[in-house]
Amino acid sequence: MADMAHFPLRPPVKRSVTIAGHPTSISLEPVFWDALEAAAARLNLPINALVARIDVERMEAGNLPNLTSAIRQWLWHDRGEH
Image 1 (cartoon, rainbow, N blue to C red):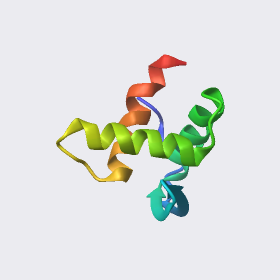
Image 2: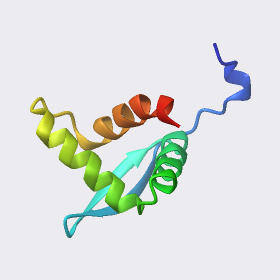
Image 3: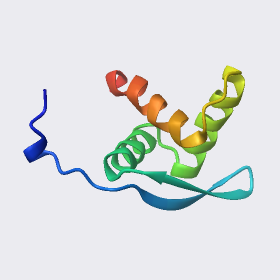
Image 4: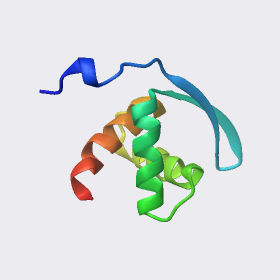
């Protein structure tokens, strides 16, 4: 298990993204923003496009978590696909 003394816990950061032409705010902890930016770079997508893709997957899933939760879960499942 990670030593929390070497892993700084930081509060969520709110950022604006645009999904299908609609601005929305997402609050994620910096570690999730870093992971989202890395995933977008790996997929050669802008952050907005990746968030939109995750949002479509979330809506298709049926049992809808909120978008922030969907992003965290997507990142958790994506972590092994590098």
